[in-house]
Length: 342
Image (cartoon, rainbow, N blue to C red; front, side, top):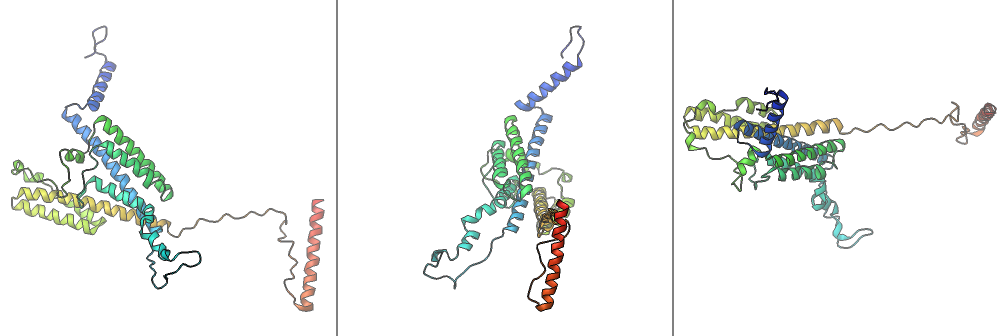
């Protein structure tokens, strides 16, 4: 303990010493279990924020594709074998190529990038190569996502989420420097491919207390409100947990518990994307900004257009007389304006 010159304990010095030790432990990876738990929680928090940015990127992609959806315009009888004025015969279905060929990829960029980013969090439905294995790779991906899949799409929504993605990417770089990892990164160590349905249960835990195996019934029931299909799968696995626990088949119950949690998570994620996209489209679809009203320059002094003589056609004598009367009124207005300016 740091002591003063009089041999007494100094509180400021104790605080500084404790803070320095805590920072050193976080940076250098101390072996204390509470610190390891904190580091793991911090890594999972960064991963959760990254998943949120990818999920909103997916919302941006859905909204953008709604306004730029591909057109199913395929021509056959209109196509000939000779060039026409201004176009060649090989370009007869150029519109289809623009909607479904490589030229359409820029319109699908936020949709595809957001989908890949979401699957990085916990790939239940796809079996993919283990990526990212560390926060350096994940940070590069998030910065790429913000610059190329957010900034140029959906106006302010894309700009806000783009800055958020870059910010989380910077947090990921800091996490790499400090040695943080998510649960998924820890799981990928020593493994090349992710198992979609979870790891095989450890036989040494076969006598585990059944009360520790959760069925996640409240979670899956709520998730079914967001996405009935995926949520229904979660409810089914939750029911299996209870049934298998009654049969004392703890390994199968543990596996069903993991599946119930995963299907519930995906149901909520998919439901949030659908609800978020539908809300944005519903609030913005068909809205037109009001046009600016041209201000009167005041030259007519409230008399309207003094240049219009009112004789818009040949109405005979009566029409000419009416036109002459209006011409006289216009002349009086002009004289009045001259006198006013004088």
